[in-house]
Length: 270
DNA sequence: AATCGCGCCTGACGGC
DNA sequence: TGCCGTCAGGCGCGAT
Image 1 (tube, protein in one colour):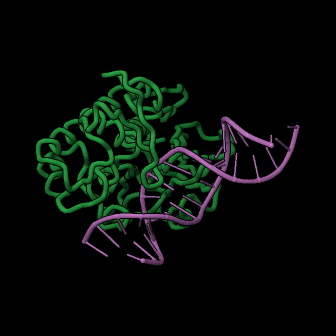
Image 2 (tube, rainbow, N blue to C red):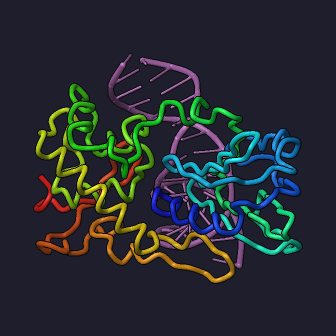
């Protein structure tokens, strides 16, 4: 599923095709994704130039003079660049058609994704206003994580996936980062020491950066030439239950924690 | 304020 | 073969 590295790869992938390009038409093939696709997109966007494509957490921000379009890929969303005229397939829900004949197309099997008009002050939009710092930004450091987690009783794994704490960390990278930091996912957030907080932040940054560099975990952005991510080859624990730990060969554990899967090595992670 | 659990959605998969 | 239940999971939201 698209997580922060996949969204970042999609961002850089579509930027070269649509940045500086003028929107001609907006076509919604489905009435709704996570939320109804707002009719105002079709009113506002034609004639707008996409000035830049940014990312905040797992949201993409298409910056136009009139304001910002937010795109979230949910669980199964994929952005594709196709030539105008290509007939939309089964799970193609939304097209941004540009004057030069390029189409930005959103495909999403499970429709947990979304396209939202955020207006001219996107960071005050309710979807972004409460969001914590970027995990790869300077503000997110060991001291921040330590302070933020004091008094919290939820597990460190659930804490990491709270986007008010830090933006854009999902199930895969929470599990992987905790492995690399040697921390048991079920550790209460408020019990994490200062040293381990620093270690965890360093692990998160390394894991996310590595994944972006090698192309993410999953097949993601497509521009005609299909591109696969290689990070899945580097996954140490995620979906590796019963297989040997890459460090100590102990069988990787699988459990459910709050409706989510956790994977960890009971020897390496304490 | 913090925590918990639901529901949205489709396809893959296992059991009978 | 086909039907049905379960699982996968981001994340906003309502309940506690």
